[in-house]
Image 1 (cartoon, helix red, strand yellow):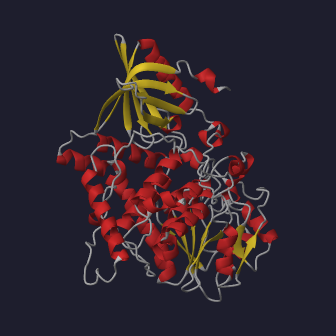
Image 2 (tube, one colour; image 1 turned 180 degrees about the horizontal axis):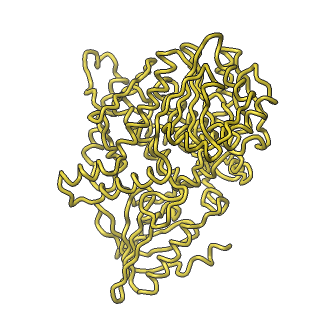
Image 3 (tube, one colour; image 1 turned 120 degrees about the vertical axis):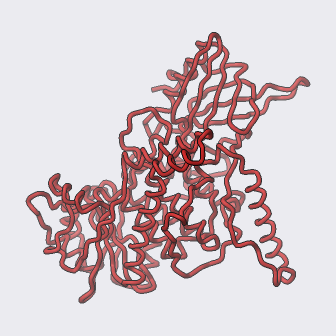
Amino acid sequence: MEFAELIKTAKVENVQLSCPGLPPIKGTLCITSHHLLLSSQPGGNGEQGTVELWLLIRNVDAVEKRIASSLGTITLKCKDLKVLQLEIPGMEECLNIASSTEALSSVDSVMMMYPFFYRPQSMKLKDGWQLYPLQHYYQQIASETSAWRLSCINGDFTICSSYPPAVIVPATVDDKVLQKAARFRQGGRFPVLSYYHKKNGTVMLRSSQPLIGPNRKSCQEDELLLSAVLDGGERGFIIDTRSAQAAKQARMMGGGTEPKSSYPRWKKLHRPLERGRPLQESFIKLVEACNDTSLSMDRWLSKLEGSKWLAHVKAALSTACLAAQCMEREEACILVHGAEGTDTTLLVTALAQVILDPDCRTLTGFQGLLEREWIEAGHPFHFRCAHSAYSHARLKQEAPIFLLFLDCVWQLGRQFPFSLQFNEHLLLVLFEHTYASCYGTFLCNSEKERCLCEVKEKTHSLWSWLNQPSELKKHLNPLYTYNALVIWPSVEPQSLQLWQGLFLRWIRSSQYLDEAWAEIQRLVTSCEDAPEESAGRTLCHSQPDAAYPLTITGTTNEG
């Protein structure tokens, strides 16, 4: 397929761009294989026009068109939730631009996406891909205990297509046992180490559901693998992210959950978390409510509650706190799984680590956590982030699981404004790049697919760009102070808030919040530069819910 075949009209003059909060701009609209570009009309003294819009077409979630006589209007609803309107002279031109945009935004071939064509001069292709290897994380564990080993049993992805080549497993369990245990778990996702709690030596494992089935099958190797995690008379907890009824129904379809008779030292705790269609529909309802600025207070609160989004945030944080409590207070090892083990399982294991481990709350540690617990662990980003909240396409495998994780981390940052080294801006950037990016970090559904597509050889890493000094400072929290303690969030309804910086970022101006945040940054910097003068002074201990305004004007194509 050639991109040129999809572009029916490449250039249109006198197009007017409108978006909330900014005056309309008129100029020349160009459509390329991956971008929509609008250059404003040049000035009367021969000045060149300014590029006012540089939109990655992959970011377009829905295209709506309206024709009135000789003027057509196209509304572009984007995956990052912004809404743009283009007024195009000429019915044919309008229909062609709409058709071309829809076709280009629907290209599903990974290797035809923009990261494979993006070549910034300031970066090298190999930079950033080896910043957070699992081997480095294993060495940290090995320095504390010899109870675990790094197995390369999945080096060719034949044991589990969604696991990385190397996994951390009990040292006393050989690869033959792992191979047989993998056959007993859905998709081959046998229990592997997710997190080692240095404070007391407990561990968190993750896997998929056991294939018990209606005939109540068992697997000695799987039982041996889990018993190897527990010392002596220790007991562990299995946190199942499905209800007891759902787990029982799964048994009739070949799945199930661990029977007490086969796993006597493991106690099951069911904590149902929504995923798939219910979560996607919740996201859609919330965005619809946020975009309706005509709502009265009663209607707004009713729609907010009706979306159930904050209920999902509460459930995710509660389950992560349960996992953290089992390890920190009960000093017990835990296994987390749902059905496939690639969605709510990763949500819980990743959140629990942010709560428990101060290293995961640093900028570098958080990036490593995302690499280890989301990307390498096999979260299917390509499927889950195919569409955002606006698409008219029939829902398939879309679900904003990773967005829910980011929202929960934002809630933690709001409740503990000094404990996270990174700020809201980083979370917003991550949200944007999971849905549409010029970098290859979130491409594909697994490490196996990334290897087949040669993602690490032919695209740039998001981490390489984020860690450039000029970008890095934008993502740092100026109030950060290293906090070695566990951060236990409140999950009471009164404690959870709508993430305005994301859901309202294109709807209301954040000028005054931005100015307040910049002033805090200035004060902190001046205090660091002059510590003697700052003695006795205190800063306001409330972090503003910083939001970032829509910036269309620009000459770069960073996503």
